[in-house]
Length: 208
Image (cartoon, rainbow, N blue to C red; front, side, top):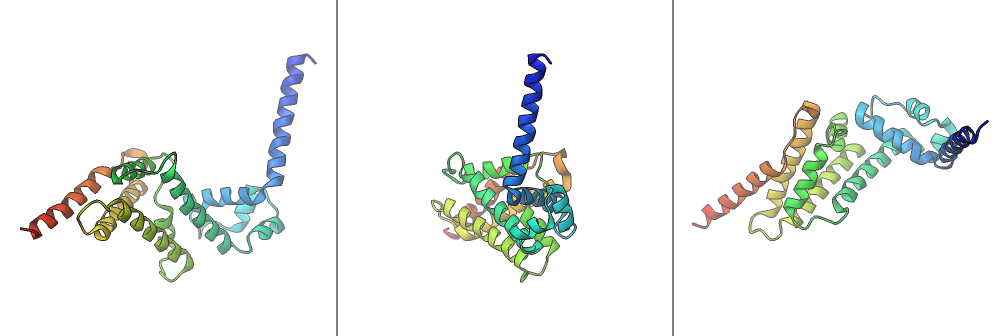
């Protein structure tokens, strides 16, 4: 065997060993990654634990050592999705104002892999507002309202009401993406600015 062939074979062996080590070392992460993809694209109800175990290549005992039930896995999935949003918004630096934040939301909604809001999707699967999954979706939406309200602080308007209206724009954008896929670019910034202008105009009329 010549050196180049030996080197190529050795590198392949190293990569295979590394992948095998990673599989053995962090099964919980692998389960979550598979569940995230399947829950988001195929739905929670349609995705069974057996399929997750098969795709993640983990034994049943391993799965239940990390997640006592499918419900526990769904809750972990939602917690990760929530954290992922705030990590995205804060990196590399947090938006300095509402426009920057809305620009980031607009960029996100147009990512190729986005097919809707994961929290709205799960709320539609579990419409009972008292259900733990639906309740987490409500909490997630309320956190976004709080975030937008803080960014609206300099403006002399009903900030909470305006934040809710802007969230409706964001949710609408995710719904449009779910409906049309990647066939059109979805806007958030322009309609959100129109909403803000209407709030400012209403306040100005009341002061006359």
